[in-house]
Amino acid sequence: MNAITFDRTKARFPIAEVVTSFIDGEGVPADNRGERLPAVCPATEDTISFLREADKDEVDLAVKAARRAFDQGPWPRMSTDERKRIMAQIKQVLTENLDEIAYLETLNAGITHTHTRGFHGPRMAWNFEFFAEVASQAAGQAYQQTKPYLSVVTREPIGVGALIGPWNAPIALCTMKIASCIAFGNTCVLKPSEFTPLSLRRVVELIHKTDIPKGVVNLVNGRGHVTGDALVSHPGVDVVSFTGGTTTGRAIASRAGQGLKPVALELGGKSANIITATANLDRALDGALLGIYSNNGQQCLAGSRILVDRKIANEFIEKFVARSRNITVGDPLDPKTQVGPLAYEAHMKRVLGFVDIAKQEGDELLVGGKRHDGFKKGYFVEPTAVMAKNNDTRICQEEIFGPFAAFLTYDDIDEAIAIANQSEFGLVGYVWSDHLPTAMKVSQQVRAGTIWVNTPLTRELRAPFGGYKASGIGRDSAEDCMMFFTEAKTTTIPLQEFPMAKWGV
Picture 1: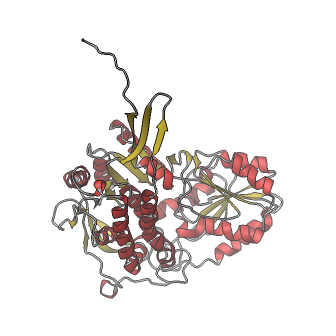
Picture 2: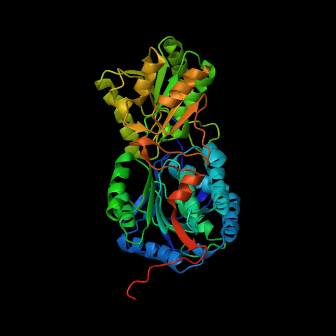
């Protein structure tokens, strides 16, 4: 068995012994307030730092700092060009420190370094350039009425955003929230996941190496029922953006609804990956493997239900199983590793628990299904595939969020579409077909926010991304983020003097 080790003295970059909040331009001292939670390296199970949880009072300080920065500070009153200049500085400083940020993300989240350094990190930096450019090009509207009036519609920043991020792609997704919020003149308080605090604490610290005014970007750390609840319910918060599980999303929507706060929720998925007999099967096989196993299988947009035309099912599934056995599972810092550990122990146990559930419900285990036995420690799970008894089984209806594929077969494309739509989720869908009418039929009839045709996992920030049904509320895109983080204001002006009734004369 291999032993992956962690030695603080040999770490590539400094690791804080205690991770604290960052409020009003300064790090909060590591005093004895708040509960301390372990920050664990999932590849070694070592506690590499401690998170100092922000209580209700500390959340109050963070929201008040953001509130002051919005109500009294220069950020909302700056020109878009000036905000764009500062956001360019943010991109620059994050790019210069990309190696450190990616290292911390890999160490704390278990995401492979090839992924954090090659994709998540560059995306993190680019988020600030992209949304600054979007804000600088935003235009108002003017309406000439039939009567001699002109109505001008402008967009104004909405206020203070509560941004709550996930643990499966912290730097990529949380910086998208920060950038899209502040680009339009808002201020924010970010709460990362309590499981992965290291990278984002460093990101927020680096943001303050630029000319950004204090209080524009604040960070609090802690669990959802403590820190998150205090943040969402705070009267100083104007809008809430959350990415994470559907159960938590429902609770956040309910809490925010009591204050009539707009919410954007990017939630779970159980997406169908439809493999047709007219597909390029080699490409479809590559795409199916990437669609379920990349990011260690921990992605809301995974193609976790693989629906294969019965005519090609035996050949396709046999090749998928063989390739699954050859996937390199290991140290996420090793560039050869394709699948790293799951993010934390309880999640690993939950994923493995679905193997027992599958057996109890009559599903057939095809490959994997165990904690990887090649390592003495670490939350490593074998790439797993199961032939489902039918689409009603729990492995087909519940989001597992790991390297766990459920196979189903179908006889015609109408049946495949019906199976795909038999789900409470509707985030994305995949179809592999070289027959355009078939691909378009799937695109038009599968109820999901994004459909990928002959490609996996492609995002375009100018295009909407979000889900139907229990996969969320709202969309992420240039225009959608502008609409969410701004308020519309109509100003009506008479173009000439007009008669008015003289009451009380």
